Image 1 (cartoon, one colour):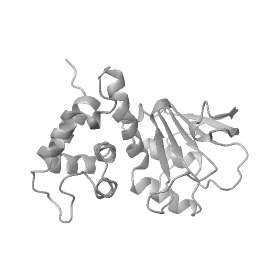
Image 2 (image 1 turned 180 degrees about the horizontal axis):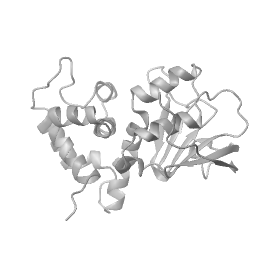
Image 3 (image 1 turned 90 degrees about the horizontal axis):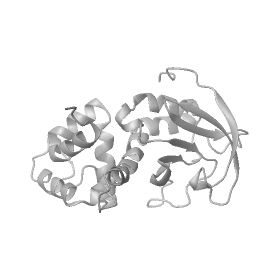
Image 4 (image 1 turned 60 degrees about the vertical axis):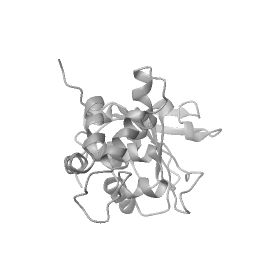
Length: 225
């Protein structure tokens, strides 16, 4: 895996829940590294519970196109597990749209395993998708809180559901098996953004879910006049 494009410097600050929403009532002293406009927060005095490092996040940020990366203000590497689980499985990350923040939780697995999970699942792009889902509607002062819950997105889902898939064992209605498992329109949107974030995914999305693709293209890559 390649190293970050540059070697970023950091400052050290104390943080509470006003800055890192997942902290609740905790206080945490963190190294704050600004990389490509994103604040990456990592424990200044590591306790050993969070195995991922700032440089691991830098590698993933390098993969994000600017039109998605700009929706992430902060990535917080916290030293505790997510307080909730999915079917008994620990959660690696979630998004706090209020501060355009992605939280990476501590999971008791080797660093290499966690780095592979970040890369394989395109975790930052997926979590950015949740932020984008809300932020687009706030920016445009729309009545709906989330783009995924607008009639336009739901109509795109229905129209895409009539298209024959290019691969076997693919979901017929929601965009991914994960979204199908969660039965979540929000996860459908986030995974659509995930696919839109890298070349092979874009081809997959355009071929199999073209109506979703058109909406994301309009909002994330608007054509200049």
